[in-house]
Image 1 (cartoon, rainbow, N blue to C red):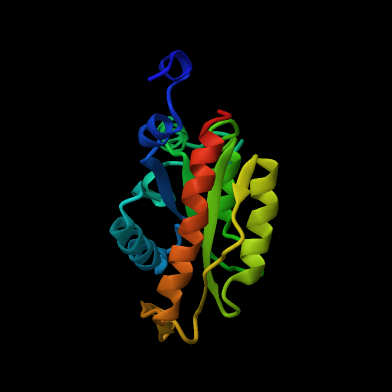
Image 2: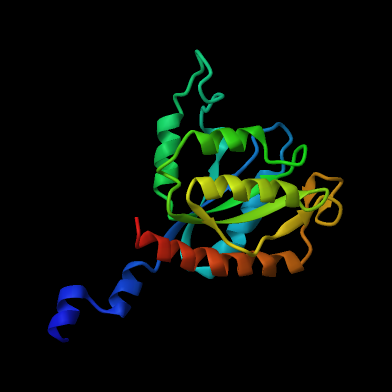
Length: 197
């Protein structure tokens, strides 16, 4: 090994150091009767088979995050929320479309933090009557402001073809390939953005 390699390390050593990034799968709804836990568990099952990152489900409902700035609200979960997001190198957002946008709980959870989101990558898995496309587009604008680089591939699940009775998640086989293609972008982007944090 030459002097420069000893001093700076080799490209292979650098890649081995960063082989496992942390990717948080964020459940974007806290509503009663939500199906996001089913979708999140499905994404995690697909992701875990890859072995290329540490995937963790992060459920907004597990944190006490009252409306940001609301007087007298119990924001005791804010510190734990900050810690959970700061520990991630990238994200997969499970996004439901409500009234042509993302849920209020997801927007509120995003607004609670700033630097914890910065210079990380994200993928979006959305669902709704039109695949949650409008919610995903709204989320992309918010992520841009938070310095989160969202990837192009976007699995869009239909309430009509990927769910039975709108509640039992039974995705079409083609959707798994879409999730893998999204992760093929999220993981390397997460590694690349790690170098500038």
